Image 1 (spheres, protein in one colour):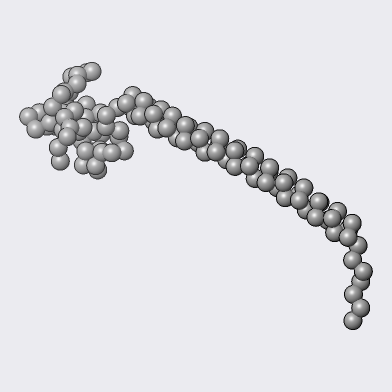
Image 2 (tube, rainbow, N blue to C red):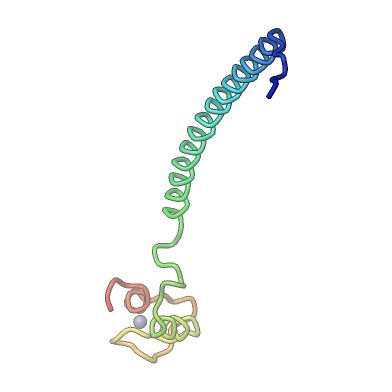
Length: 113
Ligand SMILES: [Zn+2]
C-alpha cells in the first residue's frame, strides 16, 4: 500500500488552527465561568433580599390569617361577625353595635385548642 505524501506545511497550518481554536475555547470557558460566578452571587443576594422582604411583609400581616383557623373557629368567627358573643360567659348573646369583645376574639383567634 502506498501512502499519500504528507504535506508538512498543511500539518503545521492545521496544528496552528487547532491551537488557536483551543485558546479561543479556553477564553470562552473562562468568560462563561466568570459570568456564572456573577449570576450565582446575584442569585444569592436576591434570595437573601427576598427572604428579608418576606419577613418584613409577614411582620405586617395580622398575626392569625383567616385560613389558619380551624373549621370550628371559622364558625365562631362567622357568628361573631354576625353580632353574637362566642365567648364562654356571653355565648349566643347579642353584641352591641360596633362592640368588640376581647373574650370572643380570644375564643376565635387565641392560642389554645
Ligand atoms: Zn364575648
